[in-house]
Length: 372
Image (cartoon, rainbow, N blue to C red; front, top):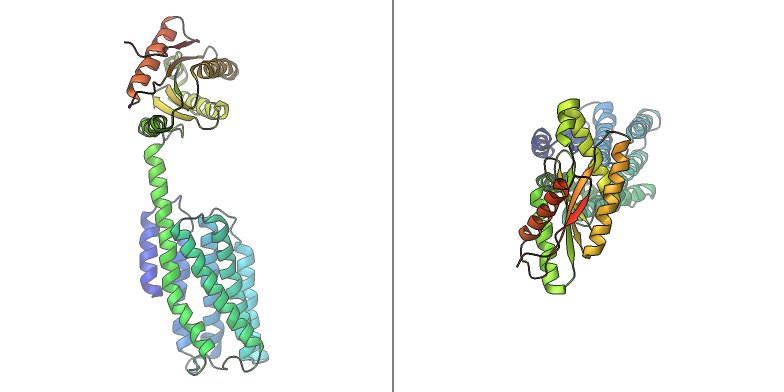
């Protein structure tokens, strides 16, 4: 199962975007888990340092790698040094309880305690940062179950008679559950991790399909989708909505005189400023080139005009420190309650913007009502 899931995870590692982190650590952990059970199988055949010390050390290293992968996936700092130290100290302790003071119970206590630490860390991480979707809940549930199983075996090792004194004790229910859980959880946890990374991929692809890559604002498609949803809400619940169509005056001069790289920087800086200045609930997007469209749900015409004037004044001060003579012109339009599509209001905002440009730029104009 480890070998099969390694192939699946390796395929994901090679094909998924590098922005989805942690897959490499999970591949490495699964590959290590291919070796560890083979060494356990050599008990009483190979030397103890191979079948006991190295086998358990690799088992702990594999789960440590999974933990680092989960931390990376959820954007948390990777505890590489602490994880390495824990695995190293546990391996040294196992060596002592094989050759210094032989104790099966002590070895089981060490391994299960460290395993519980790693699985528990992942469970808490997923439950806190994984969200409420099914894949994250399933992943967190399996991690929690495995944490409880290994900790139960740890407790059993502390009390003589609760668990057997052999790795493959056939009459020991606790040991059977403990060993069986590894087989099931190796498959289950790998599948659950595949589910969460696949969902992350779908989310990122959806964001990419709806976001302008330069400014990180909504693209035209996403703007129209949002506008359609707001129109349907207005039709059922009433309310008002306005649009701002913003154009950067003389933007071509920046590209021609300062280069396209500087032009891109101006666009990204303006987009960041726009998001800071807009009220909550607004939908800012790049409409094309140096034009930006802002949807303002639940906004009256008067409030939209006041916001447009404030944006114009703020932009003048913003650009005055960076690019001389760069201003913005804004066309404002309101959306009629009877309209079922956004095109009419966008057309009126475009007409208002044309008037602002014709009147000398760096100004706000409005066309609030549709022509009869």
